[in-house]
Length: 148
Image (cartoon, rainbow, N blue to C red; front, side, top):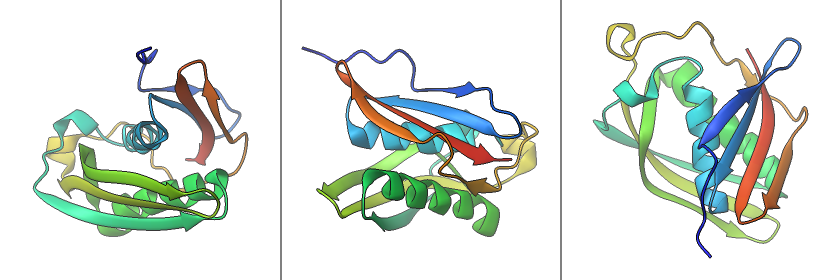
């Protein structure tokens, strides 16, 4: 049976922060869409070109910690390195069964407000608030909250 996603990601309401709900036919796809949902809060992901690739390698004792460390790392790519990433993944693999390891190679370029735009929000931090990672029907659903 094939996998049909409702949408790659969406945003939910939360008192002072933003809730992101990401979907994927595989766990890796859900993690990828979670990262894209974070970036799309700040700039237009569709305007990014893969001029360079950055390797990411994070670990977690469980899937929740892995998600936290993954999103924390992609927040740092933008905040600390001004690297705007898009939907360009040469690799994104999750290995292990607790502890877990995620390895990815993400394409993007140096952030340019004139090219990538600014959507009005800067993601400051990842949180464990309302975090859920579950397989529903035939796809994965990830929900988490970021501090903006």
